[in-house]
Structure formats: structure tokens, C-alpha cells
Amino acid sequence: MPKLADDCMEHLEKALQSDDPSEKNFHIRQVIQAYGVDHLPDEIDSQ
Image (cartoon, rainbow, N blue to C red; front, top):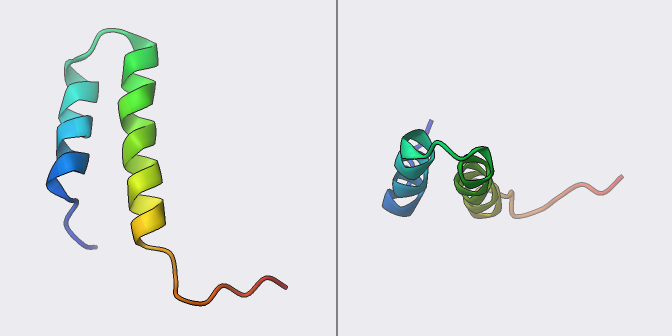
């Protein structure tokens, strides 16, 4: 598994530090979106 980028690590650390569920959700979603977009295959089979 590749290492997460520094900005992703920062979001995860902020999520761990936060007591607000919506803020935790925001930071975790940022990581999921960044990781998902960065690791899309070059070709996607749409069938």
C-alpha cells in the first residue's frame, strides 16, 4: 500500500483531534476523495 501524502496525514490527524463529528467527517472525506482521485486507473471499464 502506498504511503499517504502529507496533506492526507494532516487531515487524519485533525480528524483524530476533533471532538465534533461533522468536523471528523469532513477531514476523513477529504482523505477519501484525495486518495480516490489520485489512484484512479488510467482506463476505466464502464461496462
